[in-house]
Image (tube, each protein chain N blue to C red):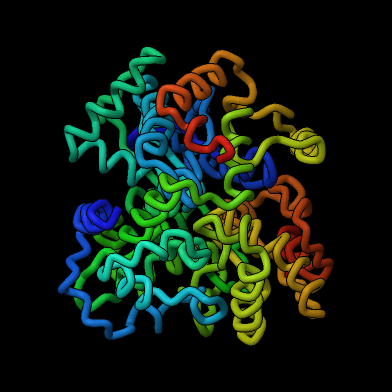
Amino acid sequence: MEKLSLFLGCIVPNRYPGIEKATKLCLQKLDIDASDLPGASCCPAPGVFKSFDKATWLALASRNIILSEKLGRDILTVCNGCYGSLADANLELKKDPELRACTNRCLKEIGMEFRGTAKVRHIIEFLYKELGPQKLGEYITTPLDLKVALHYGCHLIKPSRDRKLGETDAPVFFDELVEATGAKSIDYTDKMMCCGAGGGVRSAHAAESLEMLEHKLACIRQAGVDCIVNACPFCHLQFDRGQLAVNEKFGTDYSIPVLHYSQLLGLALGFSPYELGIEQNAVQNIEFLAKIYEINAGLR
Amino acid sequence: MSEELAKVLKAAGLDVLSCMQCGTCTGSCPSGRHTGLNTRRILRDARKNRTAILSEDALWLCTTCYTCQERCPRDIPITDALLELRRLAVKEGFMLPEHRQISEMVMECGHAVPLDEETKRKREELGLDPIPETVQKYPEALKEVRDLLKSCKFDELTAKK
C-alpha cells in the first residue's frame, strides 16, 4: 500500500480536532502508513480562491502537494473541499504544461518546483479502493447498531469527469463503507443534495445557506435516523453548528448528532466517543451518547 | 470587455450555440430552490455578452455542487463556466466583503479558518498538540505562503478598490 501524508486543511485542526484524532486512531488501527505534513496551509478554499484567481489557487495548492512530493508520499485528505482543491489542481498541472510552467515561475520565488509525482487521495475513496468494505469489516470489533443518514457531499464525487467514482445520482460505495461498521445507511429524500455551505455561500450568504440546510435536516429527520455521517469537515460544520443556527432562525428543535466517517469507523474499532471528540460537537444529544456508550460496553 | 467575456466562455468550453435553454440546470439547482440564482438565465445572459451579470450577487449564490454540470444534456461544464465568470467579476473589482476577509485571513496566518483558544483547549483534551502540524506552527512555512501569495499579486487583487 502507498505511503501517505495526512493533509489537515483548516476546519479539522482549527475547529473539529476530534476528526483529526479519529483519523489518526483509525489509520493506526488499520496499519496505514500516514505521516504528518508539517507546514501545510489552507488547501486553499475552492469557494474563495478558485473563484478569485486561478494562478493563486494553483500556486498555493501546488505548494501543499510539493510538501508531500518531498516526503515521497501521496496526500491523504479527510475533507471534500481540500480534496476538490488539491485533486483538481494536481490534475490541471499534470495535464497542462503551460499552466505548470506558469505555476512553477511563481513557486520559484520560494525555491519550489511542482513535479507531479504525488497523488491526491480522499480517505473514503482510499479505504474503498485499497481496502474495500469486506476487508474493512474484518477490523470491526464493535459492530454499530445505528441508523445513519449518509451525506456524501459534492466534491467527493463531482465533477464525475475527473473523480471517476461512478455515477452521482445514486452512488453506493460510501454506503458500503458505512455498512461495514454494522450501521445501516437509511435512504432519505434529497440525499445527494448539497449541504448549502460550499462555494463561499455559507460565509457571504448565511441566511440562504441555512435555508438549504433546513431542507436537508427536515428530510433527514423524516427518515428517523440516529445520526448524520459525512466525509467533509465543512459539511460537518454546516450540519453541526449550522443546526443550532437553523433552530434559532426557524424556531425548530433539531438535535441530530453529526459524525465524520472517521469518527463512525473509530466507534466500530472500539474507541469511545470521548476519545474521538464526538462529545465536542455543538449538537449535544445525550440519548445518542448513551446509546453509543451502551454499544461500546457491549450492552447492545 | 465583451470580447473578454466571449474569450472566457470559450476557454471554459461554453459553446454559445450549444445551450438550448432547457432549464435542467435551474431545475436541478439546490440553491435556486431557495435563492435568486437562476443558472439558465446566467447562461443566456453570458452567451448574449450581457456583462451586467458580472456584478450580480447571483454568481455568488452557487455552492459549486456541480449538479447542473452533471445533468446538462449538452455536456456544458456549467459550474466550471460559472467559476470563470466569478474570476472575471473579481478582476473587474467585484468581491464580497466576507470573501475579502477570508482572503486576508489566509494572507495573515495561512488558514481560511484560524486556530482559536477554544479549539486549542479541545485539542489538549484529546491529547493532541494544542498547535497543529500546519503552517501555524512553522514561521518559515508561513513566510513561504505569504511570499507565494505576493508573487501571484494576490494582495493587489484583494486590496480594497
